[in-house]
Image (cartoon, rainbow, N blue to C red; front, side, top):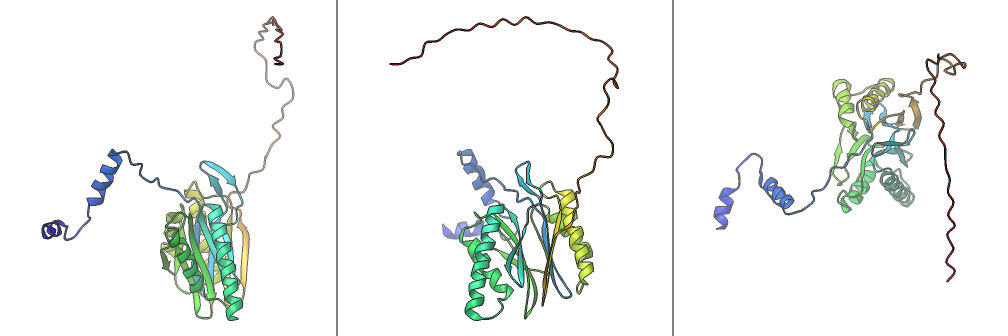
Length: 272
């Protein structure tokens, strides 16, 4: 019997067994899990002298823009920062907790914390909760061994890459990177590339918007450029739209008088 089942397993290609199982579960009344959109566009690249992180500043509650200038680049250590997409509270608390652990690590060892240590702590924490912490992260930093960019998914899987994007605007940003990124970019070229990648997410994804933040991490210094560019600057009123009385001609006037009758009924209060 077991041998017969083994022979029925497809030798190659996609296995549709789970599709049939899911259809049976739905027919039985099981509610399938809903997809959750993270919002946000966050990116990171490696350039000649370090790494550059970027993020938009729009925070949403469904279709509502709740914060137009939300900071999404979080401090972990002097030599590393982390961009967060997903639930703002989850990304904020996750990065705060890991930042405190990294500081304890630095105090215990007396050495600069390597970037891979932050990646390990973040992936172990997120894997423990099996994706229920909505935090998609792009970690960037520089240590004595070099510059590193990691993309960290909510389930705990990670990738070490020369450039990375996360969030609902990640595809638009990735198209910019794949077309224009090259090794050993200068800092100015890297800033422009990250700016253009975030702008692609801002203008092509409803979950991303407002301003562009950058963070440049070098071997000996870090520069956090808050509101590096106002991609959606509010327009200013050009004219005075308060018109004088009589500007619009009155073509016809029709006045109707309504008689209003009011009746008052006294209702005794119950005292028992």
